[in-house]
Image 1: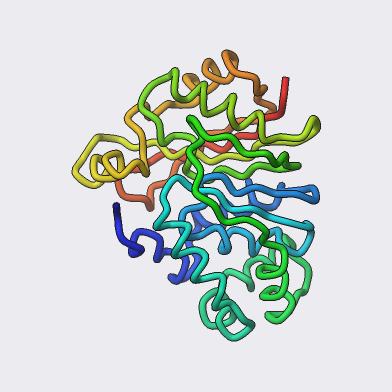
Image 2: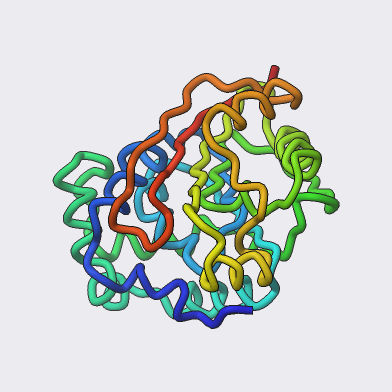
Length: 236
């Protein structure tokens, strides 16, 4: 398992790519009950962009260590921690109108008070008895190795949605299977399937989810990951 340094990007100045994730995905999160599926150790970071307009959020991840570290981070959140760690991100969220003019105290309160569950979850086999208005999956659906696994992941994700709910997802595509990416695959934080946009469209057609929007964007700033695919889907 990779150590927490993999997730330390949230403490660095906000990048154009992270701004893009907030603009294209996080800003579209709607509803009362939200799920971050495959949250890693950074679910609270993306929740900065939507925690003020929802009632509850759950964080599920395959790795026990991710859930443990995320829980520890959330337990220490207060206005000072939020300001020290995320002030540039919050400024961007304010400037771009993704969030209203919430102060650090309001943001910290929303983050802590609205989180209900932080649990280990394998979307290829585990069952979860909650249903959500929005399922947010940032760099998680692609952590599979076969088309059959991807379709299973989509169908199991569909079971987590309310009838009018939606899936918002980001899939990163790597260029070559270098040592870095192979380590991610070994740690089950990446998959060997590596689908492009056309492959994703075909896989969704075989699932219980229907794409309503998909877009591939070049991301030159990421090591070995030149493409990001953003998508939105709902139940068929």
